[in-house]
Length: 494
Image (cartoon, rainbow, N blue to C red):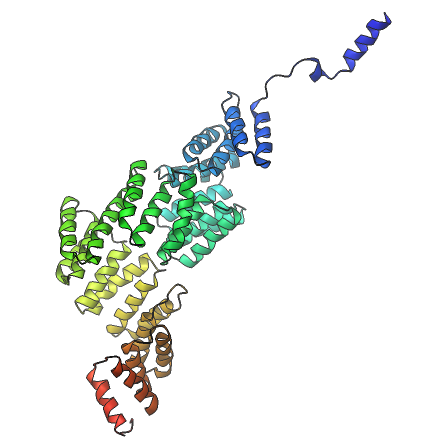
């Protein structure tokens, strides 16, 4: 009897869990184990557990959201989109907003048209959430609503959205044309999350737009190495290769993007852009006539393609066929009024080839409005304003262009000096022209304008110095050379 009592007491002292084998772990427990594995660096193990947890019939929306986040971090975007959709169907409030917003951004990277609708749904689920605000900001930027996009992105940053919020801010600033601010935001995103795909592609795009395409190429290559389905990365890689003069290499990237995103109009347009770039390479190789023939055939096949008409116009410009180029450019801007390059080329033909700066101003203005961060467009606008005697406006535009930190040419300084000289602001003009000569010391035009500045200041020695340099460099303007000859002969400047 004593033995039986002892055994009974022992059984009663054993915890219930030890009395019978435990059942299989549920989805929430597997999710907790997955988080522990991920924290320990075993991402593959974590993903395996989360997939198992998510496959269970009683898996919660939170489990699906965790799976989507991990897939997203590995740039397995299609699988992540699926997980986020299931999560959103099961969740409500902020969690639902996050799932929908993450899905919207992943859809954007994959070139899916549903992205904007998903972003709006995220905002409806959680109007103040960092993720919904980031996704909605990106959607507004794509719709051309730059100011609204920036405001939303800034709210997202303030709500603690981290890399996603900073990347959205970069995208919004880019849409507004503030490329310096966009670059800073993208770099902040990458500092918060190294290798972030959207920030990497965004920064690469800004680097290309600011004439640093070679710096952006490794960024998109890294994204594609991790995620072969990142359509935005393929598109940007193609455009970088075109910018670097490697249009033949861009063909495969453009074709891949177009095949993977049949509903993405930008991807389809990119195929044409690359074909145009390949044809224009013939111009650089001295085969302009062949390029014109190829592009005319392409235009006749796709008459509503602004990019083909723009390319044909460039080829015609290379052969000095201004009237034909003008007709193609006018059609191109009719098809795509917001095409900055087409507007710029239209201004160039009017200004430089047709010698009609007043007619060039409206086209240049539209180019600058479409890409306000492009100092080359602004410089040409300033020059056309100066040449049509709108000096105050010219000075304002040229000061902006010359002060752009990415601008390294002498042209804006020369045109600024010219406009100030026309206003008889000789000292200010001389300062601008001296700056131009530090960049382009062999500029005969800068030396000539500087000579006139010192003539206006009645500085005989500096007039002879700079007008003499202009003459040595081949300047032929007869009035300056005549005055130089007279002053060198001893005549005073009156």
